[in-house]
Length: 190
Image (cartoon, rainbow, N blue to C red; front, side, top):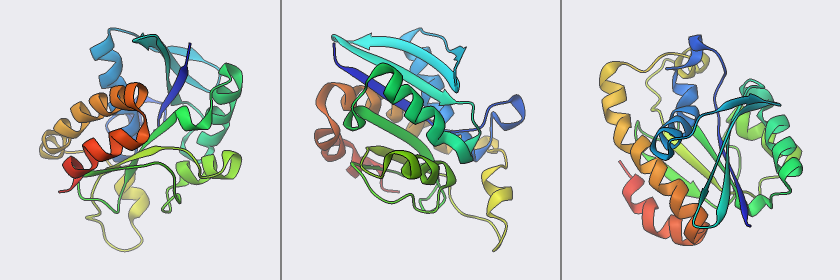
């Protein structure tokens, strides 16, 4: 059975639950709700398992905190013997407008600490979905912005992208990164 690891980046703890940096967690939570599965507290993260048309899917929300996300990703790839091309990492991105998104087969970390740590440990050759959180912050205040909570209006703007994120995960597992990029990237421009 082919196995896939879908990682939503974020920080554990209620105080981070609605922050911009937890956009990856939010999309995985939506996927878990839609699939009627729950997360268990396991090594390096909250993990939920399901299958889709004969393919095994592991959802991982690392509990290592953002800057050490690579530890969780590397551990679960190795533990379940999953090929890096079957890894999809979902993260927030300040370079994209709120609710916009970009799916890529590989690339740089774009200054994102979670992606940066993953890249240190496994390289940059893995698919990722970057979801825009906007960048409406004064110079030097990026940390306050990403760790700040979404407002009501922001969440309304983001919700369709969260819903689309669930579809993107399914497409990635069933059709692969290239077809998924061709199908969805045009929808991600805001």
